[in-house]
Image (cartoon, rainbow, N blue to C red; front, side, top):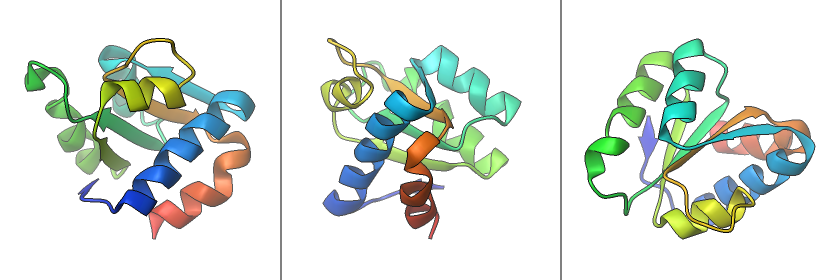
Length: 110
């Protein structure tokens, strides 16, 4: 379920995270994201590709595939952190309540 996504698609993922942050609900960090996937409450998951060691986020795409949740790899932690409204980078973000990002999520689901 991890998408090798185009730049356009990754921009939409980051936009969805920004919108969900203000109008819905997101979870940040590998541990929180793992919990939302296991509980089946995540609508979309994005993780950073520059995490070291990579084992921190390696399980996320597998869990998402198991649960049927869309999972995207974003290039940097900083990009993901900015979209999540953080002053620092973050390893992973999950959208729990999409808020006004519902239409973007529908597009990404295709």
